[in-house]
Length: 150
Image 1 (cartoon, rainbow, N blue to C red):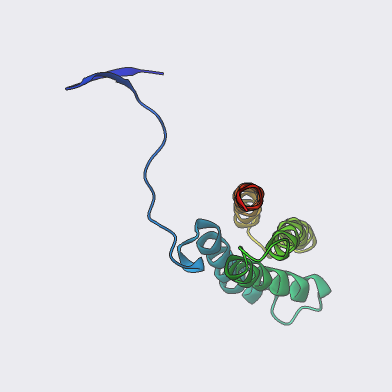
Image 2: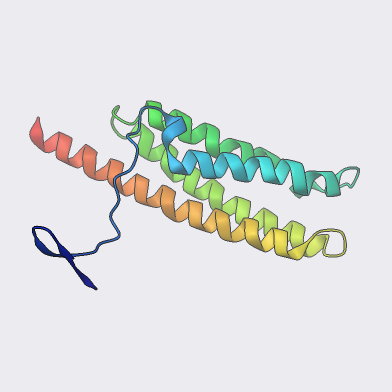
């Protein structure tokens, strides 16, 4: 890690940066990412599948819309005990399902769909899932620390 001079001496440069405070669920990065993914699926994938008889299409739409709305619900219940952790586990499961559905649609409709677009959406869902898991661990830690302070 590089060491840079400062007027107070030398310091190590870190990757830490101050982030905007979270005032509502709309400030959460995971909400913003998953909402963006849902709109991309609805605007780029669904028009290609329009008129085709594919049960995975409806499941993908449902899951893509479920994830951001559940993040909002979990955020509002984050201090109620174990309820928000159960919701977060459902969100993690939904991210996995979204990846599976995208892979199935990519393979079934290989001729009509842009493979690069599907791969990009899959990678972004996997990244969002990792971020959601980090948020889950942070809320779990907060709950444990809060229980110890009572």
